[in-house]
Image (cartoon, rainbow over all chains, first blue to last red; front, side, top):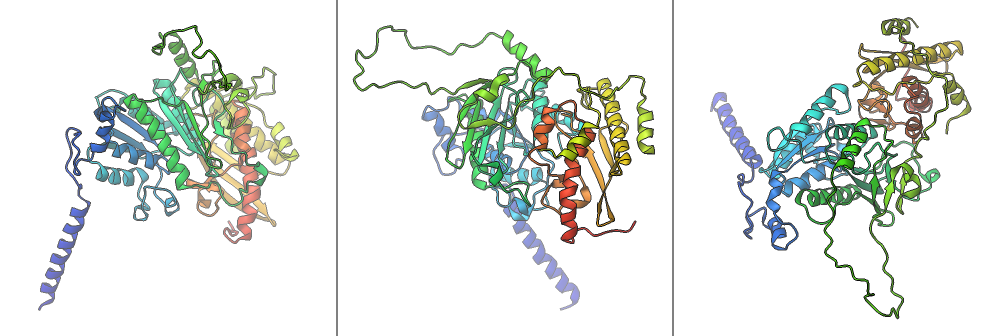
Length: 392
Length: 164
């Protein structure tokens, strides 16, 4: 056999292999137009639609009209996107500027073969394979920079399933204060509801916070509220590492986040304003936070005024007032304890946070003392300053 | 939290007045002037006290900063490039100073070579908004980071002296 024939045979063999590979990565199923409630093994939505039959959710299929933006596709964000995809969300918009690394493998979702890919790209591939009905859009940039922030604003204000509508909810799954504040700024400006989520750097606590601009405290209203872990700071060793992480804490936090997202989008149960998780003693503190009337964010204050001006929906009271005591005697001394979540005015939040929570640091005191500041006279020219700096 | 020496350095850097970020147009120009004035004063102070350790400049808009910093160890000068962006939420959030060439060489760093600041830096910054600026971030953030990390990296042989 000539060398040519050998090569041709080799090519044919490789073509076959490639075809096999391709068919394996091709969508595992066709798209589905309408969610069916039929209980058969081949229906990916049967167990979700069963929520209707059980009377938990009124119209589960409304989830297909919803758009959620997930910012930060790391340990919490990727699992969040995975859960929403499996729930059949209409559209997901993913934001992240990072790449998958082998150091991420102690968390869920990403696999070692994806190392080097951008997180949004790797996630989009896996997610559309899991559920081809979900529309997935990816954005690979850092939202805190001046040029990317405008793209971010534009995307969340026009990214809804219906053309020119905002997304239904923004989920923050980022790992730094700068990005959280950027999301806060954007959502205060646009009046968009969002959830903040986070896991502590020592991996043993997590939290979610629902922010409805004007109605609940924004992320800038008070120092961040964190779960008190009762670990003495002096015993916490930070040498040689910036952050620890556990797949468990991240999975639980993502679960709390998506659970509350579903409750909000599909209108069932009670959505938590703040829910914490302390892994050390399995404690879940819960509370509400009112906005700070002195908030530094001008848009937060504007949203607060709008909220004050809106007529409030009064929760339906079905109970008929009855003055007569339900029980004439109370032989066993049984008392009812109020277990509704405490509400804190964030202006004095440091004194009023729920048990098991604390503020990340003391709020700055508003001082009027005069401090020596740079006398930035208007007549100073910026170009002169540039030149002065260069000449140093 | 802050040692006596840092406290003294800090008290000689002028404080800023204007609460404005890069999206605030004219007000940002005002803030930028204050930033430059504070930085110039800080560098002058350093020169006078014989502890000159960095240079910085920015693009025209003042949103992107770059420069050099150096650290003396056993009479040898180790120099590193600095870069960072001013985030849209500045000055509520501090700039994230990066030394890109050290990325991956120490665990005290986030992706892209952003230095990992102590637990104390962010609360201290938050309590001093809008009075603290880039000069303060250098004095309270980068300076102590270099003082701890660079000798350690040299000892481990991760960075070596380059004659320039």
